[in-house]
Length: 168
Image 1 (cartoon, helix red, strand yellow):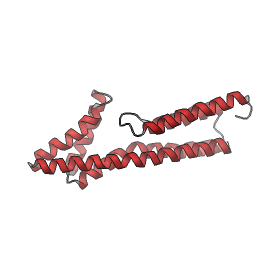
Image 2: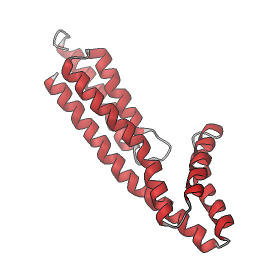
Image 3: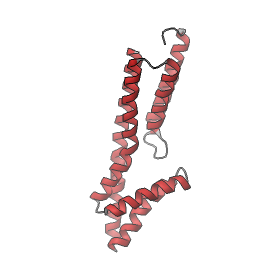
């Protein structure tokens, strides 16, 4: 990026930082793909400024973090539901219901499908509303914990991008 005029270099940096911050703030919104937004911002920065060896290294690490960040919700919600007493079958079906719900009724279908799947299947399996409710509460607690994990991952992604810019 050294051959670009200062105003353009600063503008590219500022725009990328703004998009990353939007992604970071968006991590607390269930339907907003904040981790993906952060990753796309760094991809755009790399395309515009070029991929030096350092840039490639940092982009690969950022990509691995993006993959981890996009799966942590499902892992934590499943673990929470399991801790709340849900069966593995219920967790799998609820995950599938969330994916199908997202595809059929974006962006809220997944937010409705997965919890409803947990509640209905656990109620059917145990025949006890209290146990089904415990599984749902466990899933919600897992999702809540995943918000903090995703915020941490997003902050690390931003810090790695800063290193990329500095070493670039």
